[in-house]
Image 1 (spheres, helix red, strand yellow):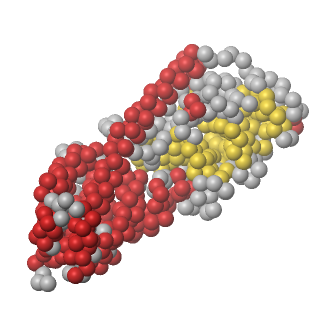
Image 2: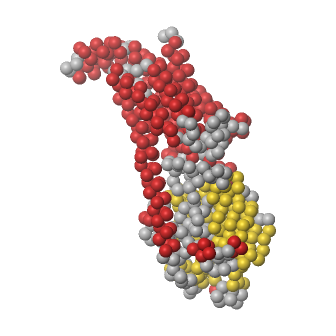
Length: 521
């Protein structure tokens, strides 16, 4: 391969990794800091009014923004003001103020670095599923309205309240299957016919349950039929109401978990400006169920919603069309072996076999070019004052010996999309979260706690470079030999599953290069 191309590829990888560490991580930390500040400001300026501003929506009147009430009253509520409800895969805590959800703990998932605590999806004082009701002429925020439990079963819990006009509102949470809930509203009384619509709200973010994570998005998202996954980004940038019709799903997520509405036809997802506590809401008719997904972004769960493309919430990057099949293959190997580390090793072997003809051609081309180094050195000395003649002489040397520098480069370029697709797959696969491999590697999604695997990766990378023929001059070769040290330090924070892939790939490449070097021409 041409030395300039090698340097360009290496520098591109270093820039990519450096950008993640030096740019993404500070931005993520700044976002978390701004979120904490905005929560404190909203709590300090909590409005007392029950009535909220109104905005025209076809067939009804709905508030332009809910009041910024972060369940402040919860701090002084007694223990019996909260109700704990356990369902398949989750433990939810409800507040009798608004019949809202103040806690969603996933009983099958442990939070990172918390000594065995369960994953918690909601920030403190950021309740989900507060309700606003609206009629033709008025609207009401029920966030501080007191409800009572009026019914409870294995898969449902019902709350009820009496509205100021005497109507009785019942709000029932159904849990038909794992990670899904349906919120049902029913109104009785003489004034019931006047209530036409509801907004059920969500906060701007779930808790980020990934320790030392620097590579993933956390915040509000929405996906419509005619667009890809849209990320809201910094919530402080939301300056006006945004209505999202025809959403397939809309809500908030982090790297591994999703809390989202699954709107039905005609329902609208609204993003409210300047309110991180109640940042978004689903506008529905009061007689229609609100469908919600809450839980891990496991493909088996997401794909049961046919046509909603919820697997788009898994960030596979630009090469998602390659990453998805690779993850399916990992799942298949896991079904055979019961170990995701072994599944990664087997996938690496398969990829190496698929690309064996290309890499073999590349290594042979580099070996042939390296043998021409003495002749090339003579040509450089001979034409050192005439670059044009030197280039012409080098090309003629290549032609005479049937050596093509690009033949060593193109096979590697073809593999780059696969490398980045696998990189994104292993980085964002919740299946690897807390999945053990062997010995000290007990979480393939987390960094090696003892930094052993990054050191092994660097050592195999160094050995591979020593075995690979090079057309570089001695100075450039010394620079390249320093790269394994750089990559070792860069990979200290990378998931163990990703480094495992890299180690296995290096070992297989070393074996292949050793075979080529020993094989007679």
